Image (cartoon, rainbow, N blue to C red; front, side, top):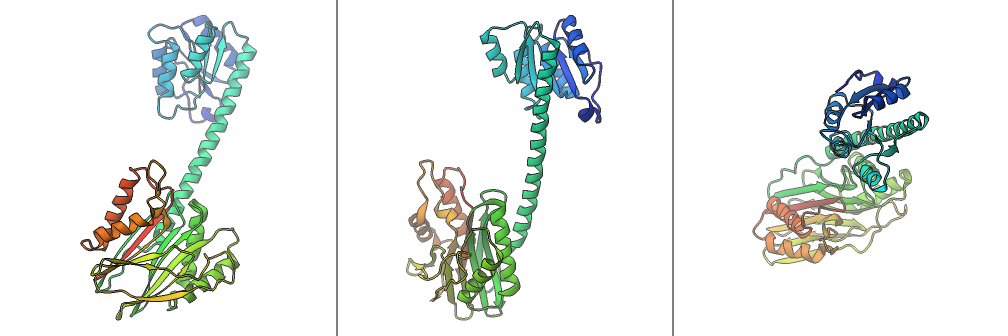
Length: 390
C-alpha cells in the first residue's frame, strides 16, 4: 500500500483527497500526474488495501480498478459503500473492462461513474470535478438537514415543556395523560387548569396539520389560554375568546378543534364546550353506560372571528371516567387501512373501565390501539386524557 499523503483538517476544503486503487504502477503514476495540481493523491494496490486505506484516511473520492489481486474492485466498492458515513463518497471505476455487463456490475455495486481505459486525462479530470461538485452539494444538504433536525429537537423540547408536567393532585380524582406527536413536534395540546380552589379545567385540542407549524400554533394557544383566560369559569367564553384572539393574530389558514370542560369539584358537575371537536365520553362504571358529550354548536377555532359556541352540563357520577382524546387515536389504521374508529374505543372503555384506574386504563387503551395497528405506529399526533372520579 502506498499512502503518500495524509488528509488534514484544512485540506478537506482546500485540496480534496483522492484514493487511487490500481495494481499497475504505471496507471497510478498517470492518474497522479493528472490530479496532483488540484488534489492530494493516495494510492493502494488492491481492493483490500483500498478498504483499509479508506477506513484510515477517509478520502473525498475513490478511483478504482476492477481486476486486482486479493480483492477485486466490485467487492471493495461494496465494502466501502457499506461503511458508516461513506454513502456519498464518490467512486469512479477506471478499468479496461468495457462490456455492458461489467459496467452494470460496477454501477450496481455502488459506484457513481465508470471510465474505461485508455482514458483521456482531460476527461478523467472533468469527471472527478463533476463528482466532487455533487458530493459538495450532498454535504451541504446533509448539513442543512442536520440543522433542521436540531431545530426540530429544540421545538419538540419546548413543546414538551409547555404541556402539563404532572397530573393535578385533587382528592377524589385521578388523572392520566399521554401525548405523542407523529413527528418530533406536533399540534395536539392538552392542559389541566386550576381556575380556583373549587374548579378545574380539562382541555384537549388538535391543530390541523403536523410538525413544527402546528406546534407553533399550539404554543400560541397555550400562551393565550394561560395568560388571559385561566381564571374564566365558562368554557364557552374561553373558547370564543381564544378564537377571537387567534383569528386576529394567526393568518396561516389552519384551524383548531378543542374540547374544554370545567369541573366544579365539590359537586362534580362539569360544564363543557366544544369547538368542532369530536365528542368525548363519560363512562359510568356503575351502569356500564357511555355518555356521548356532544355539543351541537361551534365551529373549529380560527375559521372565522364570529364563532358562537354551545355549552352543556353533566354530572360526573362517583366511580366514573371522563375520556378526552384527539382523532389520532380513532384514525389509527391497521395494515389493511381500516381505522381503529370510535366503536372500538367505546368497546375498550366498557371492557376495561370498570376494573382499571385512570393510569392503567390509559395505558391499556394505547396497548389496544398499538395491537390494532400491528406496531405500525400512528399517522397523526394523538392525545389521551382520562379523569377518574373515585
